[in-house]
Image 1 (spheres, rainbow, N blue to C red):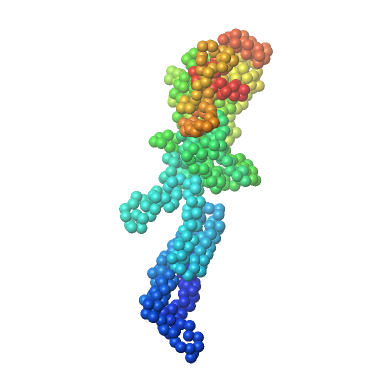
Image 2: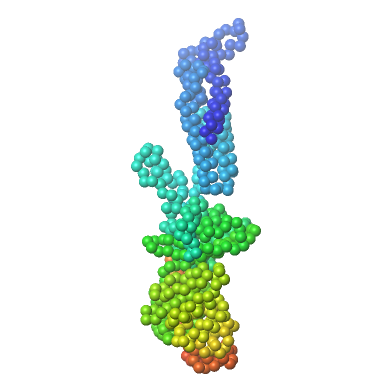
Length: 630
């Protein structure tokens, strides 16, 4: 680039010479006047100028020389270039050479897809502005034209480059200029940190129980050098801050999108964080984030139909979370689905989940029985994993031996004083691979998460007669539905003889405590929920209303990202299996009959918990209707 600059400098100097020399060698105005201006005929009488006229003529010549490209105002003769003016023009020229070289290198480092377009702009705009300025015979008009021809493209590129980047990655900011000045003047400066050391306070590394530590560390180091590393850090850190457990990074080929699962509902990124003080991500950044996820998970860069893996996110002092990733792709689109598993329980008690004291006492009693089959159930994304972890954290794990069986490729959060026995599904193993050995060692309490085959369930039910408590997790929309689904795997007699308790959970969103508003309680709502008529108000999500003729002073709530809800609470449907229900399971497992039997046994369903949460302002009636319809 510098050699090109030297050559081009010579061309410009030659052009200036061609422009200036004709005027430089011309006969000065004062001298022409002295020899007789207008003496067209040889024999014509010479015309003399008075001293005042000669003084005026010389002053006009000096002014013309001063505005032009040469000195000589004192002598009114040519061949005197304005050296100072040429130096100023060359300073701008070499600034253009330096910045054009920087733009070329920077577009390579940042993998800018418009690299050649920017190079073309930088190489053409300034020369065009300079040549246009040279057409103006007044130097002080030429100089700003050339200066703007250099400065404007540089500023436009800087704005384009800085858009969507972290503060430490931006250039031409006050901090960056100060750093450059100190470095140029050899002043003491702190060593500039690498990009992965600044920005969001979170770092990534590879993860997986089947992946050695050296490989885990290597994946993290390689990922740091990918352009999507810092944008991914910012996104995951915001997800951690707002307790967002799942996100999807999507590349549709014609566009990109990021979806965040906030309290069980998917929201576009641009509707949440991006429009509330956070910079919007560019298309290139979103696409590069998928490549970074692949690197961290050890996936192939090619678009295979389905790949999966894990990476570890470390933040705070000792806080960490494991991210389970699934990358799906076809010829035109690609998606990275990330599920964040926090290593610490978000709740320290069943009451924190939203259970009332009576329900909490009931659950603790059931999970501390000497024997029986206890089923904890929920629909997908209704907090089954968290409920199970909290329930076991509240169980008596110190007077009895607790064992949990799980897939080594899908590990759950470790709970103190519970032995983990793993099987490897990638080697075609199942719980049946390890259960005989577990029961041989006389474990009193077994937690079998998400049973994957019929044999495992049958073996667990058979072991109940040996004074064992089996706790398993299952999917179902309510307790009766869970029982009916279990009957597809186990025969009626076996399930009826083993089953002791079924608990199903649904989650309702909590109203944001900062922006919820109270409204008069409709009488119809109170009747539907079985609440006393003495309740005067209930709460709802804040409504943005504009009064005509008045100034709109509404401000979005930063606490809940203007969703209106923050966090979730559980509502529960529990059935304690008595003789009547047991007999119905054996003879006639009709859902209507089972629900009627549960009501006769005074088993409280969802409605009792839901009514309490609406009455105390924890959630809204509209949210309750949405959840119950699901």
